[in-house]
Amino acid sequence: MQHEFSIVVDRSRYQYAPTPWERESWRASALDWVAEQLAVRGLRASGELRVRLRPWSVLMRVPVEGRDVVWFKANPPASAFEGPLTAALARWVPEHVLRPLAVDAGRAWILLPDGGELFRDVLARKPVEPRTWEELLGRYASLQRALSPHAREIERLGVPATRTADLPEVFDELLAGSAALPPEARERLELLRPRLADWCAELASLGVEDTLDHADLHDGQLFHPAPDRFTFFDWGDAVVSHPFCSLRVPAEKARARYGAQVVPRLLDAYLEPWTDAGHTPADLRRAAHLAWRLSVLGRAASWGRTFPDASGTGPGSEHSSASLLEIFNDPPF
Image 1 (cartoon, rainbow, N blue to C red):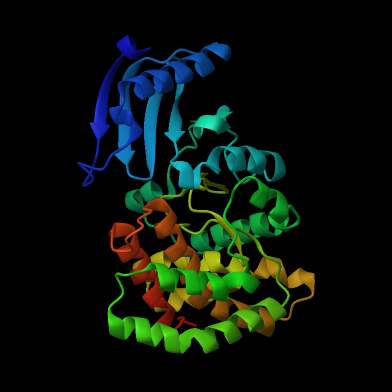
Image 2 (image 1 turned 30 degrees about the vertical axis):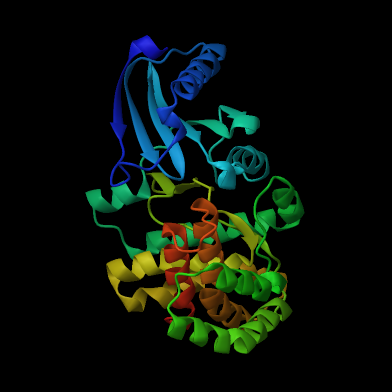
């Protein structure tokens, strides 16, 4: 397979970040695996292979004769669960996700079909009304609700747990592990600890079950191939936590595009699928308000997993510290 491709490599700003792609043996094995998986399906790769190298993944766009491209992804140890998780999601919520063509759990490799046009590309190509964001958030909430009974199974796949009741301990670990925090910022966070514990206890008491949180659901992490279709993918940052922690990233993206007035509409659309579970609208809004703040803990922990650094002063710690400080930002509703 190596000889059938011209290969274009994109490193973006991560010119010197190490990835397994630099190892010839790994590169040859990955390319051979893709060829084998395609051959099983009577397919053959040809053309220009595009490789995107990032510290958190190796992503290859593989053209296939006579059909759409396929995508190979290799995850680092911190997100090695993504392949098995994607396969499980295809069984549990097939209408919302991609069904992988192949998964090698031991090597953290996954081969995926093309999902169509990215929502980000749709936004760049034509005007998109806020109601489209409302539709996608409603469907994503339905996905989360459907996955609530599978939360323990998701954890057994290796997906990190930042459960609502455990968030104070997550906060303590983040604070202890970040030497990048300035002293005054650390003091502010330490003083916040009792209030944070109260927030977590209140959020848990409102009765919305922990489930899968994508944790980075922006417009580049979902496909919108048709007006009535949304497909969610890229689960490498996922955690098991309070579902409403998912709202912050897409709502902030939409707010930047349409203005602050769009947030209440998105909130209502996201919360609607939860109303038939016996929760009052007031309780759901309060839970969303609390989860908006607390969502930064999962994001901060994700940076630490992606860029592990024992010194607590590397890029992962810097990003984690910046995320942690966002807990002081008031929710926009």
